Length: 577
Image 1 (cartoon, rainbow, N blue to C red):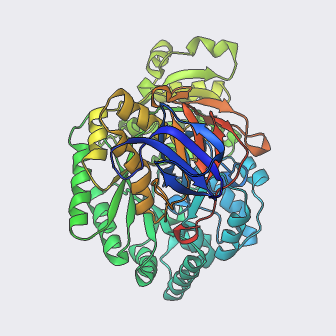
Image 2: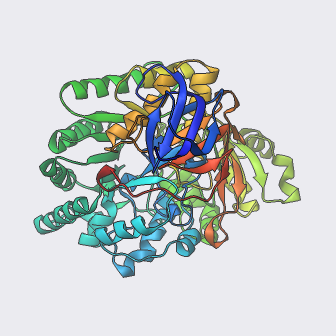
Image 3: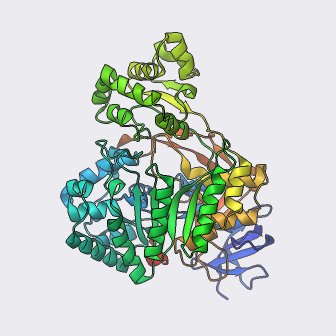
């Protein structure tokens, strides 16, 4: 028998299928799992001692925005550090293809706000050698990758390519334009796309374009979406990711059901969540998913499970964009933002929204970033005259100054050249409710990492590590078997990955080996600043601890949390290598 490449020796195997964990060895050759358990007739070039460790399938991250970052960071960190071995690119309808040459810079500018990816990093780190969908996929195929990836058609890019930006934002497509978009999607599926994605958040989108206007898909009409769904139906392949939240939950869910009925393909719906303030909130989402699936509508709910807060400055913050007044003062250059923040009329508009009887802005802030009164000043741009405010809440500073909370936040930000950093504390997480959201529904997936997006104030790529240490180890709400099924096998199934997400003989060897007792992150919650992006740009990161080995297609990419430099990842056209 030929020599094995790797033997993972003496670990506790959790294979992703919900089979009870068992002790055994795993042998790998030519990128695949060749044998599990028993004795092998040959030796291995590398032996990984897994005594006392968990051996499980690599994690599958369905909601990422590494479309730019994968070009300079093949391992898609933060996710790659935390055991993710496969990612889905092109979520929410956003991406960089198809694209005309004169629209490249505008497409990058879009991503600087809607997904808060630094412009200089994209400009320096991306080598544009494509226009069409097949050209893009060939380029991605050639690029070194430390993780596997599959790729959605980014619907916003498709509409802009066919209709032009202004038309795509202001009117439905014509029959001729719909026909062309359907044909391009069909050809893209031939070339290896996995489906298409959409964000539809209405005219006051939480994630707006760089100029403050809605993204193309935010105001997309139903028929333009259903037109693309019929492509997947006719092919009987692919799936759809949709983030729809227009403020009318019942209508939003009804449309997702219509989309599932039209496509007859899996829908990944963003998102379902639990809140400690309402014990029924997550259950209502679970009941909807169950009822839809009972009617033959294959809708999966992507669940927000990460415990985290936000650390942000008003120079880069974009997640109050559903507020027209806040959006107005936080768009433009830094100088333009400061000038608008000083404008009494614009301040008055923010205050009116803040005091509105329907509490819309207050609810936005409570859900994203934290209520203003609870924001803590964490950093003050190294200005000694402002150091006295570090550690204080906005409510405390407003009381000291005798000012309104809005005036306090804006004045303090201006005094720090918009580099005053506010810490939004963890909104509160219920282990009981979050575990119910996962284990009590066959249609929910942990995650929504947004990996690669909101890089200066969010670290969602660490969700896998947090999920295991919180709900499995510390709270004992989920079994290891259930956790790994949800982190790997179920998302791989929902997204059409072939021979991924489980450990079985003949499957691709995407494997994590870790010490459950040592699993941890550094630092906690909001992370630390790392100056590791092209163009001198920085991002916020959370590093992983406790992973002995991360293996992609039979090659180690990380050993004891240190990179090996290997880039064995593949573009999985149609979900397989």
